[in-house]
Image (cartoon, rainbow, N blue to C red; front, side):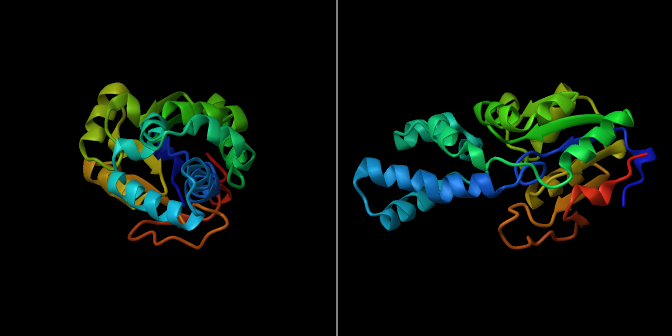
Length: 218
């Protein structure tokens, strides 16, 4: 699927790409509404309706991904709530096998995530994926989400790369399209970001179901 001899740098998304998106979906769709309902004395259905609308207003912005923002907005300790269900954090199948093969082949790996730094640290603690990376870039460090076109020029300043020799693997169509517009030549989507959910529309992009499809790395 990939001509590895043409790849100099691989940018990897985290949630829904290296990690099963089920944790995040469960956290924001079930656990946060539960704790919000308890704190406000609301029926769970009402809490879900209120939160769904509030989340929708911030979708695609850095606020959407910021645990500090939602802690203040909802008057909940979001990092502490994530710890309550951290046992649900899990790698997608064959991720470690893929990362180990990439390291053995001397390929440069960069984690590029919209996740807030506090969330990234929690997930690193439970999965260890950071130890395979040459660099970790959180969108909050740049001040732009990956689905905003200027992000990619800012990333170039922070982590210089050759777009023609770069592979991006991401579960977000807006992110993939922004990267393509910047000139990133090799792009792959994830067919089922939440392993307990349905297949996702991957648009015009080639997609993988498992990182096994990218082995061997040469």
